[in-house]
Image 1 (cartoon, rainbow, N blue to C red):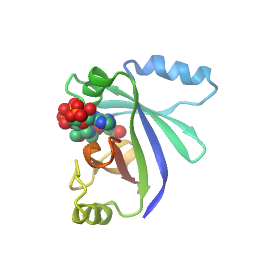
Image 2: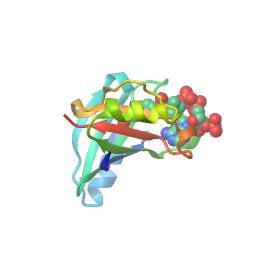
Image 3: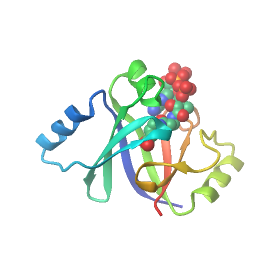
Image 4: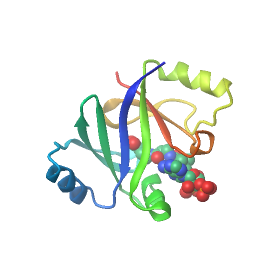
Length: 132
Ligand code: CMX
């Protein structure tokens, strides 16, 4: 049901500065995009099959702004790739897992995404994503 770790989301205050840091480390940064629905600006750093997703808030009520206020910058979520997100969500709901999104939403790069609540995953915010 789970194919791979698709990406690791990292909350940052300043996307430009964070991009520079990773470039200094010798990594490429690509695919910058604003995801209006999630109130974030993102950029991706491919590392093998997985990517690091840098996340900067675009509004004070963005989940990323709230996260940084409480916990500071750092790992915000882990995203797992799945084949059929709608089916996976139904299965998890039937098992009593607390879903943030009951239905898939649009994420960066035209993916379908849904989050599971960190209170039902041992404190880790998990994103499930389906690439089309
Ligand atoms: N990882 C782990 N725990 C988290 C968390 C995170 N990223 N974000 C919040 N929490 C915890 C808080 O620490 C808090 O715990 P305590 O009650 O023990 O203090 C609890 O969850 C509630 O946090 P909150 O600040 O009151 O925030 P909300 O309940 O309003 O929202 C959440 C929390 C996870 C439901 C919300 O952040 C959400 O819907 N996230 C999914 C969407 C998202 O994060 N989008 C940005 C990325 C988009 C993208 O990748 O494209």
